[in-house]
Structures are given as structure tokens and as C-alpha cells.
Length: 231
Image (cartoon, rainbow, N blue to C red; front, side, top):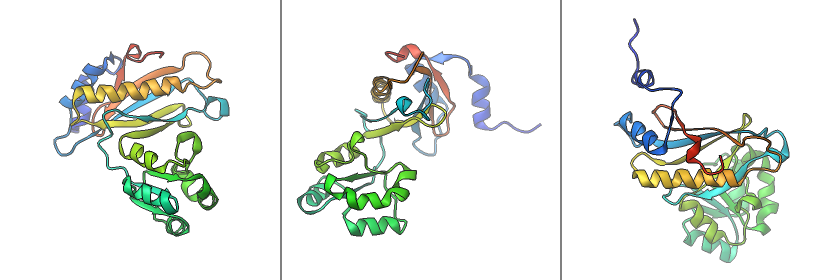
């Protein structure tokens, strides 16, 4: 008989149908955590939407109060004073046509791309490059803005984007298992509150259908919907 992996053993002793409160879920993730690295804590929300319809798309930004625990790489399209402000705020790369050519050559190792409004003529040529990676600057998300200094600080300080996938699911990291319990809980609440507020006009019936929380190597645990206001 084949030996069970550590993850299979974990799943065997957990109740797959039980909905845990956030405190219980965090404790279980810690109990079954890897000792080799600091795992990322992730949340998945199944929503009652069909994102193929424009009036059912769920997308936005939220600032996680405890940060993400991740070094976010930010590229900024800007000139002159705005370029200097972006660099001073901590941007990893700032440029104009030179940055566009660099990205066209395949250098896309960034988590966020920001642009001033006057640079969108240049950025627009990168639609086929940035679009599929979800990196295209968007004024609705605050990544096309004259205030690039604040946008860079927000990106570096724990702001994350959430976007519903084809099957009506949002997956987002909310920190690391090394965070304190209260910090993970604060980030969980900030994310879920933001998603509930982003309920689109076309959503009918129950909006939040299911919530689960997991870590990189850990089990997926159902979270009691009562933990989320408005769910």
C-alpha cells in the first residue's frame, strides 16, 4: 500500500465539510505548516456572478492593513518631476519609451505597473504584452494617476488587486503564516469587506457562496460565511 503524503494525512484528519471560524482556520494552518519556508496565506471566494457579463465583473484594489509580507516590484511610466517622485517613493523602474522597449523585449518581472495619464499613448502599445498578465494600468484601479508617488507607496505598502476569474472565484494572498493572528485576521476582513462592497449591479441572489483559506502547502479550509459581513 502506498504511503500517504503529509498533505494526504492532514486531509484525512480534517472535516472537509466543516466551516471554521477564522481563528480556528489559522490555528489549523499553523499546525500543519511547512518548517522549511514562510508560507503565504491565501483566500478564495466563490461568488454568485458570471464575469462573462460586464455588469457582473468584480475587480478592485484594497490596502491590507498588515501588508502582504511580499517585496512588490513596481514599474512606473512617467517623465520629469513625476519620474523623480516615483523613484523617491521606491519604484523599481521608471521610464518612458525606454521602459516600453524593455518590456517589449520581455522584461516583465513586475507586480504592478503604474502610469501618469500623459504616458498612456506610450503604454497603450503594450496592451498585448501587459494585458494577459493583468498589468495594464487602469484609472479605475488607481494605476493611471497623476499622483504616482502615492500610487507607488500604496503598492509597496500592502495594496493588492482582486479580480474574479472565469468560474466566479477570486484568489488573493493576504500575508504570511509568520504574521500574528490578529494581522492575518485584519487582512482577511479588509479583503472580504472590499469584495462585498464591490458587488456588481448584475449580481443576483446570494453574492458570496463559499469562502476558503489555505496556505502554500496547507489544506484548504472552509470558512463560516458568518465571518463575513454582508455575505
